[in-house]
Image 1 (cartoon, rainbow, N blue to C red):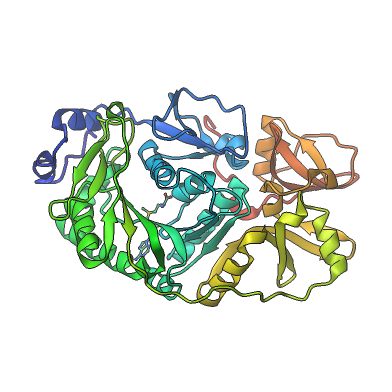
Image 2: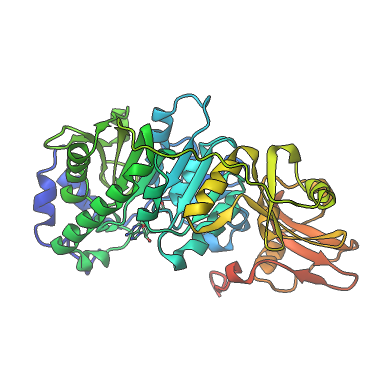
Length: 458
Ligand SMILES: C[S@@+](CC[C@H](N)C(=O)[O-])C[C@H]1O[C@@H](n2cnc3c(N)ncnc32)[C@H](O)[C@@H]1O
């Protein structure tokens, strides 16, 4: 942090926050030891070596020495997501409000790219639950879809909409996460240059935008449904003041989240409505700055009947063929978008139809591929999914060097005798497809996500 200093008045304001420890906060920002953490994919077990447990998230792990994730095939296979530890607290909130998983729920992650909290939420959901991950900025949608594709589940829909578009689907979601765009002071340690860009004027602008986003999405929350609100800012205006505004403006009650003292998280109360919030300060927690809170909606915003049995007419013969590529095909609703076949958990057919009427859908369930006569041209999503019936395809195990060659779309140093579409695997996890031919291998790893960087040390 040598060439950077906290913005004027920043520390004075923070010093007035109950539970804030100024000395440990300054030290955590000066000693330059950044903390690396990852979250394991519960659906894709791997031999990743880690060094410690994140206290508030079962799948969260610390890593002492930050490796090059770009050059780890397990990362590309979706075995884990590199995520700052404090953010993983959102899973603890979800578990608190949903202790049993009897009734399926619909969850919206409204500000979702690049997908850290979407994959976090998704890990805690069952196939019969639905996750809609939305991102307003079009250019940020591909990273979100790529990360969800790697995660492998088939109960997600990705949309590219403004929050106001969700006001049309009244009472649709049982849980809405608004991980709001904010002034970002919680990331000063990871990105000290952001200190020079921070301003009180921007905090005020963020506050206004946060109110607008929340007001827009509020009708989409079901009666008795939950709003989880989070920022990576320390500013009162973006945190407790927003809770006061939500409780005053809408019929919402604050939900208290159980925490252990050893976690180092500070519980706060908003000045007027006494709504609980949870603050994470570097130096006091093993993570970066975060604010999170949970509110329950008490009113009914109305909402129409979202049932729709609209069904595409599709050739039975093709459906039967597509089913052979899936594990438990009876669990899925199969449909087509242009020439591509897709599968989503059967329970989500009506939701998909309802959302389709109001939103721009960028990904739904798993894209299986195109039929070309009696052959399938398989999609990358199918390779990385949990629903693929691997018995229908060849598999080619790769060592680490070969996996990196594959992920670069380079030629792979390997001798093969087979012919046909093959899953290219590393440590038992699929990276993507290749077509094995008698004298060469056609590498079908998607160009857009191939490794471009030079290997460390080169
Ligand atoms: C804090 S980031 C989200 C990080 C993400 N939840 C994760 O865990 O990976 C906030 C997101 O809000 C989006 N955003 C920016 N302006 C917005 C707006 N007016 N309405 C909704 N989302 C917005 C940004 O593009 C960004 O992806």
